[in-house]
Length: 226
Image (cartoon, rainbow, N blue to C red; front, top):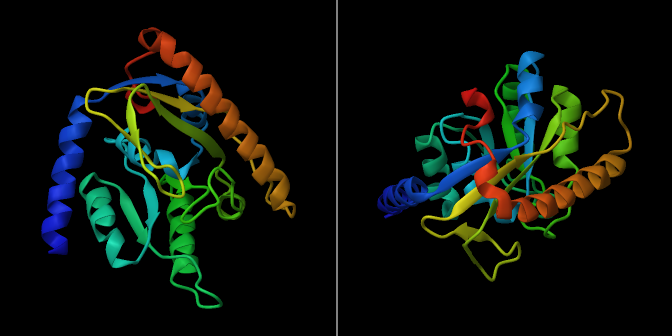
């Protein structure tokens, strides 16, 4: 049943993504890193997880997906879309559910040049609050963090802890890349960078929502297509 459900979800994802129309802001932030041969980590809110993954179709990156059975379809879909999946869940009490190993796996991939993506307030919130995991991964891999927002002009919003958003068919999606946030190798104050990243993501969200009105003025090409 899980396998059947996984194929059904994958088919739905491919079909609905075919109807989406994308435009991009901030391509230069990633092109500058590309010219310097620097790798990076996307930082995205959990509520934008779905359009965030779909906007990168054609450019694989590594993601962490829970080891729970409920997440099997998500892991299957990500793999079918070409992404690299590390499986691990958050601690339950003092018991590590594989989250540490998944983070270590992502760091090793980051060091070899594979970009990554992290839902910075996941997997269970609180919503729109940056957790320290991405700061640690950036410090250890020495990959800059790219604030990453995908905003839609039409979406369904669910009554979940993150107010998960699913863009409706034929929606316009504006994809925004913020300026890189570099974490020093000797960084000890994670909270400082967490607050800084949170501010960047909130500002980028506000700017992207305003820019939806000028959607047609932005390029159709994603940064890796130039």
